[in-house]
Length: 218
Image (cartoon, rainbow, N blue to C red; front, side):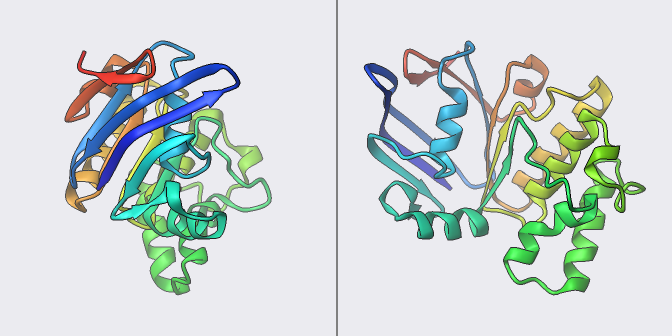
């Protein structure tokens, strides 16, 4: 579902990622851990096509994002990826349900099935009673859960999550981790989570460490 080879990313004279390689199979859930500043979020952005590498390939569900133009990357990301951002990126002028439904709207899904799917995900993250709320009425933890629901709503081929439990209490964090793992495994998606949490890392099938620009076993 994900194959990365020879990935290089530099910022000025600093090489953040150096000939990095990673393969994630369909139905596999991988956790990436590492020190702050090691390049974990940069790696997720490269996988999502939000940044361009200086060298190497990023193949998601058979499509090499690194070789695409901006428009093709946007369309591929919209259809095949789900991204839980550390800073949420919840749109303030849309309700909770509208935020969750947005990927389905962009994909042209009809109102009834997208409403049913968004309601299913909101219930799964414990926000079934907040569908009509506005983002300004939510806590940070609630916005985090909206972001998770939105990332999963279109059943993406690859799910990426940047510290998805950072704003959650332990019980809610476990609920979210279980949901992420279930969506990956039940739909044959690939999953990559970046985290500092040992509990979150333990929920994955495999843990790798990002260190000195490359990935290694812990």
